[in-house]
Amino acid sequence: MFRRVLVLVCVVVPLAGSARAQSNRIDTVTPSAPELAAYGRYAIGARTLQATDRHRPDILATKEGGPTARYDRTLTLEVWYPAALAPNQKPGGDYRAITRDPAITATLHGQAVRDAAPLATEPPFPLVIISHGYPGNRYLMSHLAENLASKGFVTVAIDHKESTYDDQKPFASTLYNRAFDQLFVLNEMERLSKPDSGSFLSGRCDTSRTGIVGYSMGGYGVVNVIGGGYSKASETIAGAPPNRLLAERGAGNPEYQKTMDPRIKAAIAIAPWGMVGGFWDAAGLTGITTPVLFVAGSVDDVAGYETGTKAIYQAAVNADRYLLTFINANHNAAAPIPAPAETYVAAEPGKPAAFAHYADAVWDTVRMNNILDHFANAYFDLYLKNDQEKKAYFEGWKGFKRGTAVGLTLEHAGPLK
Image 1 (tube, rainbow, N blue to C red):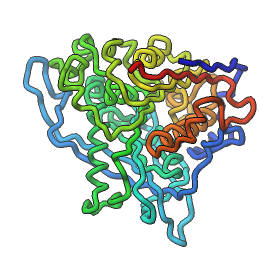
Image 2: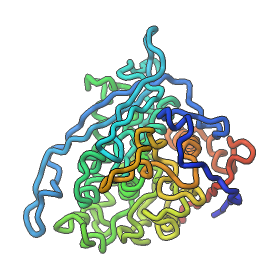
Image 3: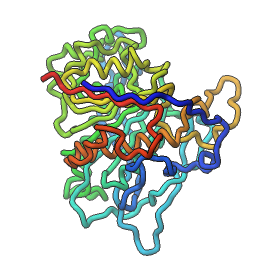
Image 4: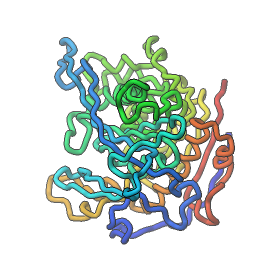
């Protein structure tokens, strides 16, 4: 195991918006950004889909001690992909995104072209699945989705039903459904990518090379999807799903490890929630064997750091893993887009503080987004495209301009077996 640390020099940016934040751009790459944050050579298309998982357990309609209710669970998906623009099409487009305050809708600006034709002159591209927090939506990490698509990935971000800004329901639903949603979307993307699917994705996506990214509750799902079985204690924690339903994906269930999906070659877990709450223990985390990059703020007071993300990193002893830490950042480290200008208004009494949902008190969000995009590109190039040259980006601060890695630490540990 090795550790590389750079001493933190104060990185304070006023919370009042800069001009770039006020423009609601998700594609800003500053002059100080690391090398791989720059957009790639591919034009980007974007499309919105819906997918329905039939007869999923309906957690909110199931009573303790009663039969498991079932429902058809429909998810809205946003798909970004390398595109072939028509002569009259120029890069760029808008997204209408509901914010943390559901009464506020923001207009975001990026590089993707709505409904552009997919690029069909190259082999199928690897897939990356993106999963938001509780609450959140499919645009929360759209900076990463666009950036990866420009580098030759198909990316799909999920609106997790009962866990979005405008559809936030009791927590038990999210606790149960997050991992199932991520796996269902992987299967749905494979179905749409088949030659006879009739979808724009037909022949365009190679799901045998899949990466997965989760933030907060999305990270909770990712940890479970890649082998971190839930603890026995989690089955009966206050607010847990009824009838011990978390045991389906618990470390003590011999059927659980059979659900590990070989198509998932690498994962990024950003501030994964659950360790502090007792949803994992050290024994359960030994089931993780998929390579994983953990990302966290060192003062995360939601998911925890020393007893949260870092503890998961340390306990995943059978995986090759990294831990990228933003010193003095809180729970919003790296993942959320810059706070939309529409959220700068003061929150009304009883409403969520929309601006604070995206921002960090110490770090500039655009800088954090650029750093995450850089490392995610290197990581998925390495594990999904077998680009061995990208390993060098994890053996030092390759790609960072002088002085711009200040405030970051990067740790690495290899598997015990």
